[in-house]
Length: 478
Image (tube, rainbow, N blue to C red; front, top):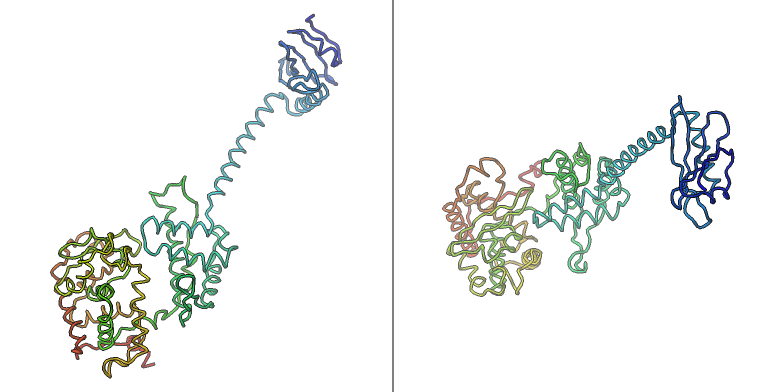
């Protein structure tokens, strides 16, 4: 039978005997400490804590009473324990419900703050994140050096210095960068080629250190500038929080490329042309093309596709530097057309002309044609006394030679820049000068082809004096 009871103590037997709508009350110890109200609705008995402050009653649910050992809820002892906790709140803070709601709100606010701090911490980019970010950007923009840069970072930074790359990028110091670069500089060149079976070159690591120095500096600059970029997608990016570039504080090396950018003499270039004439038709055409085109970058020429080959010339894609890829046109001269005729007549590859198989030639295989020639010619005597002193060379030397000799035969700096796609970064060059320089490039490449054919026949120009790097730097006069 349902009813009210003012008994001071409640037991399990009485609670289990409550009918639907019935209540029981148990006073708490002490005056003004309130009481526990048990109320049964249906099959569930719920315990409440009741109190009165300034004649205003309050009620707060403690929880469901567990009527059997396997039922959900709280035991009578647990309900009393929670009620005593509420009494303590009442006596110290007043209204228990208001106090608990205030605490819950504060805890939720702190949880939001903690979650944000945790989220911000997860977005703090490490040094490794910064390196990966730079490599991903290079890859996304189709830069040919993307894999090379990633390989250098892995070999010279991530693998030997895991504790440094794990640091937040904003905490990297000039001393960290110095440690990395000094380690590279003190190292020895690695074996090269497939499976690293090609012996390492007999050189030091100065050029590698200098190159890595440049890549690291650019990576930090990119991360630093991304903070203020209007195109930065904050929700998808790491927060590097970089305000300074630690790499800029590390002094660069001097005369890094002193040994590998010498220009060939006319007689040495003549020996190369004579040697290339002995190669099979396709190899000969592939090797001579970049020379007769004025010393073009091998990577750009190797990537040439058929859709960019016309009856009048070829359109190369300049993908060097930080900007977007840029197209530039090179005209066919009668001599160039004659040289590359084997590539145009027999379309060995469906992709483009520069191919020895059904695939386009790789840049490293392209370069190897010239390094092999450099080895052969430097080890053997030339076809005349002057050429017998041929030095070892690579494509870098040939490209420098082309630029040097183009200038020597009277091709202007501006025309050379358009032929070789040199610096076009100014506003005037990029946007206002729309001239394709077709006439100038055609005349220059025609004159250049005649010059090459003449030196192949040992008709050297006596007015073309080539200076060594020592002479240019004044080292011979120190």
